[in-house]
Amino acid sequence: FSRTKPKTKKFFVIHIGPSKTGTSSIQSDSLHAHEVLQKDNTRYFGRLGGKPTRYFFNANKCMDKIIKNEHITTTKLLLLDCWKDEEVGTLEMNIIYSDEGFSYGPKWVKWHVNRIKAIYVDYFDYDEIIVVGGYRRYGEWMKSVYSEWAKYWCREKKCGDWPTKIAVQNSSLPSCQKIWTFIIEHVRTNHYDSIGQHKKYTNID
Picture (cartoon, rainbow, N blue to C red):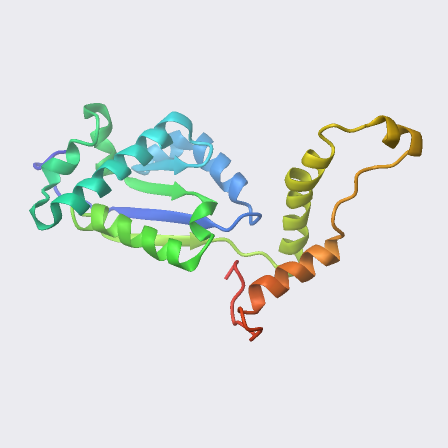
């Protein structure tokens, strides 16, 4: 990490999803556009990122642990021990970090932003953290979520040993929960608290 280069403004983008709002396309495009991003002094980490993202995740975990253990005595040089020499240059670049898991709860988003700030703003001179979230009309989003749920949590499990002899004889297919039943349960679960009072936000808010 060079101390001689003049300070340039750097940003850290956290793309939080949520799921089914084009996150996979954004992640895939960002991954394949790494040469273009590099020209803008930017590097992508996140889903589909493979080995570099795993290394980045572990480096963050290492730095986070040092900060928690050392508290006020932590130095930038101590944090640099978490990085390989050939990867230290990443800390002079803008960073895009994408994972729809960040949006699975408001507390998780806040925790992650504070964690990034404690490392990159406080120690590595990043100027701003930008949180990016996708938006999709609620009705369209629900249908897409249902299709995903049916694909992975219903059809795969119920069709794993299908067709059985009885199913062939009866020409029957395994059934999934009807879409409207799924949606009603989702809305009830996320719009009402434990005593049945209406809540303002759903999980995608």
